[in-house]
Each structure stands twice: as structure tokens, then as C-alpha cells.
Picture (tube, one colour):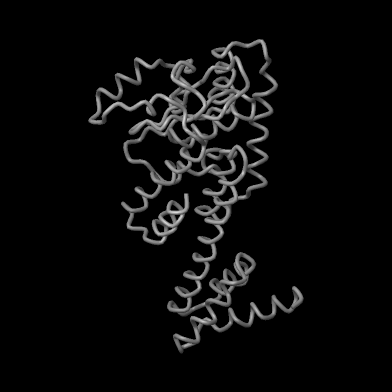
Length: 292
């Protein structure tokens, strides 16, 4: 079947969203879903022009199922890529929750941020000097700042919102910071510390390794991305843990993979959507988590 014929068939199927017979409608639905994201423009146009609430709900349901499948597939592809570029993981997540998200535009803004940081770097800098450069670009030039409100909002997790408002939470700012550092071959990783997401700078005397290849003796210092890139020590991490009701574990001081960071972000978003009783979003995130 030619592309033109496919479009004609798709448009014909979408025009049948008011099919009263449930069995027939389910056949139509499954056929539309089989077109994947190619069906989205026709479905979105139909949704805009539909007056009946029942038909609108049917179309919304199909759109979301297609977008959920695309989300899972994109994450599976990302997970399988060598190195799991963390900014790409954030972009995939943002694209699902912000359908208008322009990957090309915000990818370009990330590259600009990276280039501006790269121009100020050189190999002779110490670890602390490299972080000073990163912090200067992030918090002075770009003026990113931390969202410290007691009530967290889902918007603070999305890449477009972080760039547009220069504001993010500990994990969204952390992901952006990690992404720039790792592209510069600087060994900065996330630390999956319960209650507070932080970053760690590992020994940079050798080529950057995978997170699980480092040990505690490789830790140089920790970084708080939500507090202007403030640097602190293990002693302060110990103190934080002692103020909570959690048992100290070695992984609370060690780097974790980019996949674990993104999974943590998904879990945090899931909790927020559960509080909002947004069952569509929580279903999508639970489906995603089950595959990760």
C-alpha cells in the first residue's frame, strides 16, 4: 500500500470514531493504533473538530495509547544505547508530558550551553576549578536556580520549563549539570540519596569510567545542583542521613547510572501525578517503569 493510500485509509478509520457498535469500534481502534505516531495528526485534528464528548474521549484514549507506546519504545531504544546519554532520557520524558516540546530547539539550547562551558575549560584545571567554571556558566551566565518550594510541581521536571524559566528542582537541574559535565568528559554522576538528589565528582586522573567501576576512595567531593553548585563532603552526607529515618548504605555515597537517575525522576513524577489523581499519567509511568 502506498503512503497516499495509507493516509486515505487512516482518515477513513478516524472518521468512524462515532461507531455505535462496541466490537466494531474496537476493531477500528486497534487498526488506528497500528499506524503508530503516524496517526496522531489525523486524530488530533479529529479531536479538535469533534463536538460529542463520547467521541472526544475515544479519540483522547487512542492518542494517549499511541503516545504511551511511543514513550516506552523510545526509552527502550535509549536504554540500549551505549552510555545512555542522560539529556536524551530527559528529552524523551519531556516530550511525552509536553507534546509541543521541540526536541530540535531545546537540543540546540543544550548544545549552546555545552559550547559556552567548553570554551572556558582547559585540561590544566583542577577538579575544583572545573566545577567553578561549570557553576559560573550555570548559575551566573544562565542564572539557573533551584525550585525550593515545599510543594513540588511537575513542570519543574521538564527540560523546556527549566530552560524557559531558568528554574528546576534538584533532579532536573542535576540531570542538566550531569549532561554538560559528562559531555566534557568530567566524571560527575548522580547519587541516589533518598530525600535529596545530589551529584558526585569522581577521580579524574584517568579516563571516565562507568559508575559501577568506581569505589568510595575515588570520590573527590559532592555537589548540590539545586544550591548554585555548592560543594560539600562525605561528612555532610553522613550528617544528612543521620537526620533522617533511613539506614546508611554504601550506594548513598557512590555514583549511580544515568538510567537510575531517570528512573528516580519518573518515580518522583509518578508520586506527584498520584497526588493529582491523574490516572492516565500514572498508568503511563507505571508501564514505563515496569520495562526499565
